[in-house]
Image (cartoon, rainbow, N blue to C red):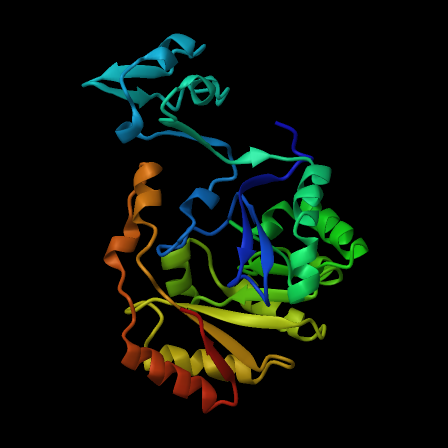
Length: 303
């Protein structure tokens, strides 16, 4: 694989929840966080992944014959993959007549990505939308992200970056020079709890948000709200006080947890930790809205 090309896992057209108005969202593959409630688990690994969907397999076994590494085995009337042998050559994906093998992720040169974005220019012009770079974590592939942002700027396309904020500060500030809007996730104010549920501490995230707020960048802070994890009155109080004291931060988007990713975890053969999480009640959401508003913050409920 060519590391000069970004690794992506999805392109979403006509997106309405990834920034203002109609947008094209480019999903970068790879994230330094591993959140319990992740709705895009296919974006966590930065590597090309190949999965087998047993329900689609018709038992022809053509993929076994076509696998140069003998990484596929027929067991109990189903295909199993030995990931230690699989070279990700994608022969099985190309061979399978029933599409039981699926590649998750691909590398694309920047020209191709820009051409895909340009297809939606009429929608951007009409709705005043633009492009959003999401993930995974787009800052995880900062060099490629910055080049794409520059090229979109040359085309006068509104640019949004959806980020966890877990990155080197100088990288974030360079990205800010080529970005109209940040969607900045703030998951937990307690660093120990943050590491427990995401795999990383929150000190760099909070420090970066402070730095970003001082640059006059347009930032929308977003709280992925998960019951029993970050919805307590005490936690929301700490977050509201933190945001209240930041310059140019006057609004927060609340993203109530929805249990929608189960099928993705099953496809990836990963443990679905989301099954242990809970959807916040309407009463809890109303209480949290009031807490933020009491600190002078405008609140938008997304979903």
